[in-house]
Image 1 (tube, rainbow, N blue to C red):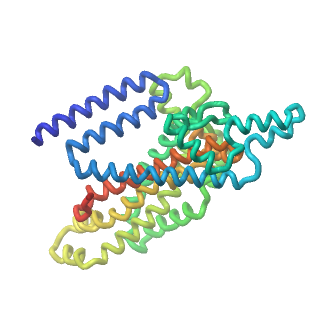
Image 2: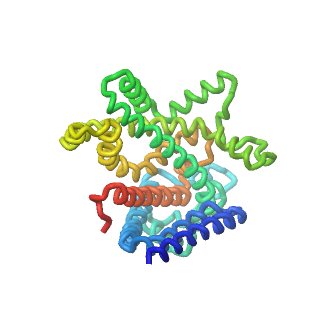
Length: 374
């Protein structure tokens, strides 16, 4: 039976590679298509690997529905609190009659109460109509899906860099408490926590531009990107990501390092760590096999909130560095009171936050055998 499961899992991995290659070749919205296909295939894998895990994921996905609905309702309500709407500026145009502006407003349903707009939006969303951006004159779903890949590229790179450096730094700081290395890491952490992300981005842009512009200070691609091959495009993308990723990762590293240090110090003072040392175990074995496994559990719980934290912090950083991501798109939508653009971005952000927490719960069940998914 286990051999059959292994065969089916390997077969699904082969299907992954084939589908990803086909979706990339199709071009349009390939990123969103890959996410949808991968989500479906992993649900199928869970059926073969662990049906209890599949039931747990199904319950969490069902719980996501009222959360998303609540956020959309709050979004409609809060935008209505602001005076005017996206058509208000049109009334300043003397060539447009007030009746014409009212007709535009009625065509988009903005003349109704917020709860009427909310239920109308939900009904249209069930028919895969997520609204139309009046400011950009394009469907919201198309715009959000285009920007989603850019923001996720930034977010995933930031998480990998921040976690890959903060966990070793926290372990080193805890095992060398009050020594020069611990003091330097503590100073770096406090600086990272004290500097706002957008201000740090301004400082880096000023530093790079005043020393010869050896790095791109804005955008995602160079102007001649169409003339590059795949390797050159990857290098060009990496160079453009250095400033926004460094700014976002440094702030995340600062908080994660302090948390990891505190967790390790608490675990290292436990009785079973003293017992392990008394048995003559090597210090590396005590730290990495016994202490780290318990100190990492709170970090995994925090992982679920990292997507939402990075999305919230990336909006201003994307605006400063001209990164064409979802955060800057949402910020522009809020400033122009583009209702459907803001709500569409909110739906995507909340879905990412819930999925991030779901991944954290699954990882916690895998890492800690005391936690059982049920």
